[in-house]
Length: 503
Image 1: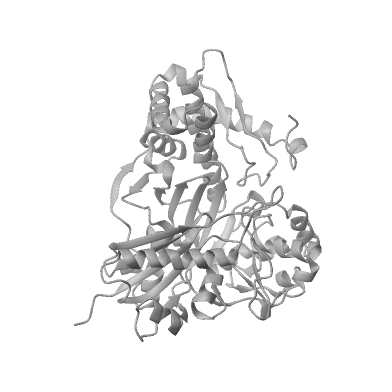
Image 2 (image 1 turned 180 degrees about the vertical axis):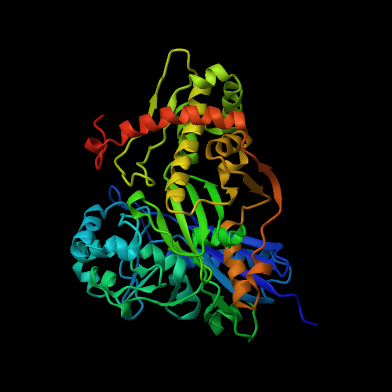
């Protein structure tokens, strides 16, 4: 008797690798995870050992296999997701040449300017403005500071594609992740030789490209035997970058579908049926993990991180729920809300719309009568205003979301959800679960490469609720946002851009 098919999704995250095992109806049968350490050997540096991704992958899959009734024997396909931009350099013999330089590494500011000098139309070609997080300036940095390493580079891989190589022996990537390298012609979904040449690279040093829902390779016979998968060849889907896979996981697959993620950072992601580009406003223009789809993405660097920061300095790190409840009670008084302090949440600089790591956070309008509850309210509100800036950029590009799902740790805070809906003027759908995130999207891409259809596989998850904007709340938010925009303009004034403000 044939056993029901199962599908394995693997997400190579920054802090851990997660593996999830789904059945044909997408019920989660088992999951496993393993941590990955990050090294910061110098200021601004952030690196990981690719071998650590591989060890964590094996450990996460082993944990899922141990927890799954019947193990992995019925797996029919594998999907991959991963952190984007992180540069993994291999020699011609497949040796890792140096630790991978991560997406949150900030050493490459000068190289970003150099790319623009070398290729005057670089931004138009890549549809994105060069930033230290992207892959291309990292290779320029290696060429300048570690020429002996750069001379040996035979392949440049992204994290999930390094794991794919270890799983299969194939050098393959896909469009959504590769768009974040700055080497892709995003509209045409292929590498651009001029962009590669600006970094001293050629197409031969790049992996092959497939769509995220296509078969990219097959699991090696040795691993298939070790995992108890039998003799059948197991396809590995192209997969996707973490945000694109998260979109697949929550069903954001059609033009106008979007999600707002309230994690450490805030991400507003919208699926489009064409490339949308507004690099001068720091809109990320990437391919989606599905064919003939793209996405626009705007990022506020400090979302839930702002709330964690305030709770930490107040000595209330374990009481965030109670702090939010106090802020909710504070805001229930219209007079107190109208005269609350204003918070600009640029604790680690800002991405959209300023693209300036040197910007700093601020409270304005503080008075003696303001207590901790007023500061917490201001932080929640300030993050909502930063997300409104992101929405304005997407609207300017013609890509405002028509439907929006709210995900991430911050989405479990009802008061913040209401504040966001009122501030953005968007109905926000709150899905059940969501903890599987990008790994769920990766598994869904595995289902697609095994023959499933997008309509059947990428359904939207059940909702635990929908938050609708309130007219009174929206009016109060609009009045308060004028004060925020004035404070943000002062923070981002041209004389202060590019370096932190003086203490």
